[in-house]
Length: 351
Image (tube, rainbow, N blue to C red; front, top):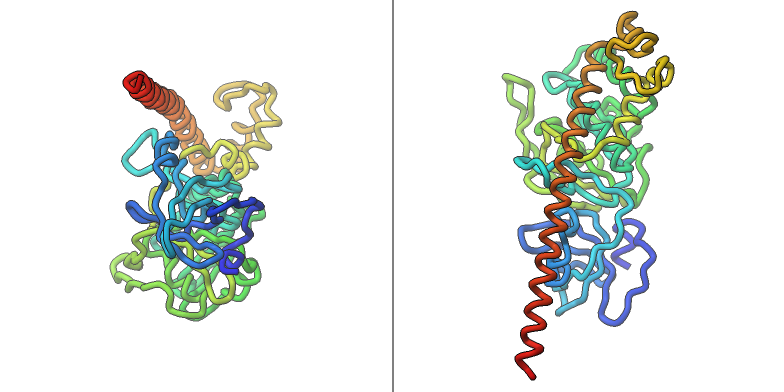
């Protein structure tokens, strides 16, 4: 059974020529799908394309779908099954469009390199996105051999991670990788998220025990690698792990994140519960526990500013989304109305 090797399929009774499948790669007009009978190159049905109000409703890497087989090795995707998790961001260059990075993910490896790439504020953003998606995060700090000492960096990450596993590794020497392997389970779907050149492809190769991904060299001027991944793809490793490698994302613009923000900044949420007023804005109100923590150094200004920035970004995105949803709904009904008019016209022409 090919499909059981690609995760735990949802319970769904297929009928007739229907097939249950999982999206392993997305191209411009076609999708690579794994089914019980093997791999197929599939396209969207006209009905699915018509009924999808936004691009986020179309299939993404990791989605479980129902398709009909047109001929051996070719299928037509009829619908996308409900997602257990959805790793998404605001699409680059837009204000109102959601981009699904991958779906039905179990674990997110948040990859950051020691050296010039090290940025705790970016890691807070990654954590917010992962928690909001319903995905378990694991922080992986790569290129350990670049640093004579990593203690300061580890302490900085521990200060914002709150129980999230933190693993320092060197993919070229296998240092720390055994501990990472112990955190992962067969048939789990794992996504790697991190900036270009942090060593995600090298990490995939190390976890796989073979050269699955091309890797670039390291620039001497800034210690950053040359990014090699150009598209998202779900890969099955020989050891049973399922990995989604993604193009580097230096800027991960938040799509929602309200739930993830509470998890990532749980320390600030706990402080706010001790404020004198429940609607405290943490500005000049008396009895503000957050301002007190800032004054005595319990809460750093950098972390507070990061929280405020992300909160504002999420609020702005939500306002834009409401406008976009209204426009999408209006466009949907325009299409339905046109289709009904055309149907009525044909009906009366036949009389």
